[in-house]
Length: 113
Length: 114
Image (cartoon, rainbow over all chains, first blue to last red; front, side):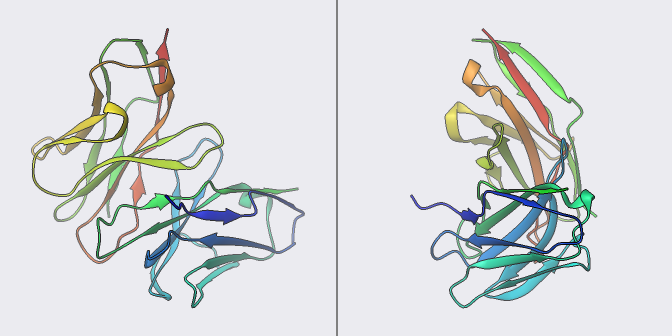
């Protein structure tokens, strides 16, 4: 079965640079979520989109933005990167009208140097 | 605000023995409860969920979880542990309202000893 696809899998950036993470949800899923997992920490919710509209917002810094496109893929844009942004970024998708559990992608490991 | 507590950072169990990974939660309204497993450098894999119905929920790989409303708990169990079950386990909760983001516990590292 198709899973959530994230790209790139690994990304190394320097401080103050910009990064873009991409997420391709499971086909026909209508909701996308972004989570950040710091080293040794639990995943923290950043933001979600339902039918291409922002639905909920968590602890996402103002330096970050995200959107969901007409083909349902989503991008997380991160600017003015800081060392503390180094983390594993997960995208998850779900079908609200279905069983509603979230299926996670493999994550993008961002390292800021 | 919703929260999840996993009181044990580490659980060790011998292969073939039953295992339990504990989880308690706090949420307004009816809880939607989930267990996920994470292997090193991998994403989170869905194991099972409780939304309504039977308090005993069966999931993937022989895992099950018992919902206890009075104790606000959702402990993960397996009758006979395998070495391959060794991984990081996360309990998660969301409310029954329109906000669907998950709140995770701090995770429990399960080690099954051969």
